[in-house]
Structure formats: structure tokens, C-alpha cells
Length: 567
Ligand code: NG1
Image (cartoon, rainbow, N blue to C red; front, side, top):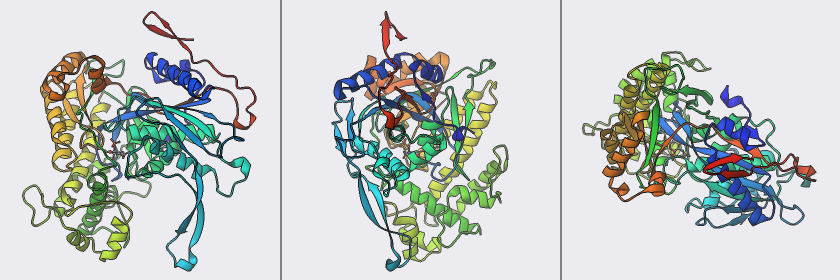
């Protein structure tokens, strides 16, 4: 199982790139990073962690309802280089973090031990006081180092008991970060940052033994919540578990699992289907997910959870008095799923989802117009939930920051069920590698997903709607927003032969691209192929507490004409 595998660790770029299967020009970035590290901190880095961004091909806003999604890692990534500092000169666990991008200023921070008030829900005299590691993360203002801190947090609290002896304390480090995943574009630069940070702190502190890809995904999901967004696990799973040339079918229920899915035309034997190429195009509307979380992302999380409870009650399914079940669990109960979950090839999930798409009509508010536009007020929602108001608040609202006058239970649940079905259909078309019309079928599913995101989930925006329409007119089989939406990128499915004419047409027709040329244009519109997941490159053979004379391995590259050669 892919999630049970260890994190790949390399000692040379040659082996790393053989696995990444990508161009050696990326090697120049690694080398620049190592050289700049040497310049700034007076020594070479000992560890570099890589974590890619991701594109979601289909399955939007359904990971936190625990339905399967189909993302792929992209080549663009975050690299974090690091080396220990002399522990006799700096406080334990101290971090001196720099970013290669000049707009992100250097930051230093030291974790402190803090007494948390209580755990448990008993009376105050039974409060249990615990000490935890603490780092200040300002959730109101988005700062680059918050993501570095978020990754560090989990490593500290999982691997360094606050009662530990001096010897077991986290070491002080210098860090240098660089990245090619554009921020706020729906390509998950945040998850890539948190995954790379978690990985580099694990490695620098010699804590990687026994950490599987699944553990890194779980830690990164937990860590990212500290930045203020209650995300599902899609981005972290794609960034960690992906393999080159395939998309990744990631499921979360009853446990995290991931299977590679080959895309049409990718196998050497497939003849009739042209090769699928995915083009990413940035709408140039920045999607500030954390800043708007209370009226957008977090609100959708609450709406889908409340919809799950209310639908389950309408359907006469069992629901615990304080249980916060998900829409995936509603489908499981409706179809009498066994405790260990349905097998991947079991048709029951699909059949029950079809039924759920019909049953969701029960959530349509009586006062609503044709599209169920009006939603329900908080009072109406509480009444429908069958819970006392105070209890409803505790279970559904107190743990998450949201703001709304109306809650759209019907439209959100309808999107989730139909989108979950589209993911299953997309996967099935990919399995029929040789079908002539595979790309057309996939494109239709992507278009239906865009309509549903726009109309029912309300996570698109005018520019994304416009750009996806232009993409279809320019020859894409299908085009949709990717990631959380409200701005950011679209992903369009193109046959390999049409890539350049497609890019030309899009550039001419989408007004914000009209004056862009060269690098500026290829920053906002580019083809991508599925890349492999997170990995580490450890540049010396030292073990932490025996830092005597590191045998540094070369990651030099040499330019030979226009080629770059590994040395
Ligand atoms: P973005 O904002 O594109 O990274 C977010 C969530 C995903 C998923 C998508 C919507 C985070 C880190 N990621 O992706 O888990 O819910 O929205 O499908 O919040």
C-alpha cells in the first residue's frame, strides 16, 4: 500500500531525478539553493526536503466530507534546505528561517513550553494540566514563516516530550526556503510548505525512522490546521504519496488509502487514445483562503457536516446524540456498509451514491426557489438537527470560525454527492485506457464539475467561469477550477497535439493575459505532468549526535552549452 511506504531519501540528484523522471534543469535550483545557503550561513546544508504542489483533476470540496478525490502532484515544488547550528550558542529548537524570495523577510523563532489549560470534559477540579510546545502563529495575517512553524509544531509535540532530558531537545537550525508553486493559486503551495517543513524538521532532528508516507500525510494535515483552515487531506496526500505519470485516487474513509491511476494515453501500449495533457491557467484572482475562511472554506465545512446530520435524520439512519458525522458516513449507513468499508471494486458505493443524489432533495428548503437559493437560518438549522441550541453550537460551531445568515445545506450536499460520483466515473474511464472517446468523457465530467462548483457549491468566481469557458472554446475537452476556488487556477484537458494552439488562443482571449509574453506568460499558463511526491536529499552521511566530519556529497551541476550535466 502506497501510504505504508517510507519517505524516499536520496543522497544524490542523479538518483532523485531518475525517480522524479523530470528535466535536469531542476538540478540548477537545488544547486543555487545549496550555494546560497553556504553564502548566508557559512556552511553547506545537511538536509534538503522537497514537496510538490498539486493539481486536483476532479473531486472538489469533498475530501472533508471523506469522499475519494483524484489529484496529481505537479513538477512545481517547495525546497527547504537546513543545517544544525551550534547548540552551545543558540537556544534549543531555535530556528533562523530565510526565504530565497526577497519579498519574504528572514524570521527567527524559538519554541517555548506552555501549560495548556485543561484537557478532558470533566469538572474543573479534574482538569488535567499538560505542557505543550508552543510557537506563535498569527492566523489573522498570512505570513510565510507561519507554514514553516506549522510543520515544526507537529514534530515538536509528537517527538519531543516536554518532560524530556536535555539530550532529547530539538536542535537549533538555519533554514532556507525556495519555491515555484505560485501562492494563492489553488495549487496547494501551503500544503507543499507544510509537508516540506514537517519533513525537514523530522530529518534534521533524526526522527524519520519508522515515519511512513501515511504518517507524514497525517502529521501535515494536523499541522496545517494550525494556520487556521480546517482542510481535508487531499493536498497533503497528493504532495506526499504521488508517483510520476499517474494521478492518485485518495480515499479517507474508513482510513487513508491511495492508489495510482494511469491517465489515458500514458501507457506505451495504448494506441487509440491521444495522450492527455493538463494545462494549468491562473485566473490571476488571488484566492486568499485563510483570510476568507469564515465565510467560505470553513463555512462549507460546517454546511456539509450539518447537512449530513439532517439528511441522516430525514432518512431514519442512526445518528449519535452528539455525533458529527460526514456525508460519506451517511452514504455508508444508507448502503449498510461493513465496518471495514466497501472494497474498492465493490459497486455499492456508486449505487448508494446514486440513491443519495435522489434523497438529497429532502434537504431542499420549503421556502426556496427552483435552485434552493435561500438556504436555512441558524434557528431553522438547529431545529432540523434535533439538538438543543447550546449542544448544536458546541458540536458544530464552537470549534470553527464561521459567519453566515443563511446556510445552504441542500446545494452543498447535492454538489458533494454528484461530485463524488463524477470521481468514480473519471476513474473508471481512465481504467479503460484504450477507449477512443476517453478524453471526451473525462472532459464532460470536468465540465459538469465546474458547473456544480459554480452553481451549487458557490466556490467559483466570474473570472474562473470566464476562463473555463474560453478554454472549452479554445479546444479543451474539459475545463474546471482546481483547488478551493474563489480564484486561483483552472485545469484544462487537452490532447497532446493541441497544446501550443490552445495556449495561443487562451492568451488572446483572456484579457488579463493579453499583454503577457515569455516568462511572464509561462508563469501563468503552463502544461504539467504528474510528478512524484515528497522526498528528502541528505547531503552528508552524519548522524546527528556524531557530527564529526560530514562527508558532503556533491550536487554540483555544470552547464555544457545549453545542457545541464550532473557532476
Ligand atoms: P487548496 O486551497 O487548493 O490548497 C483546499 C483544501 C483541500 C480541498 C480543496 C477543495 C487546504 C490545505 N486544502 O485546497 O483539502 O478541500 O480546497 O477541494 O485547505
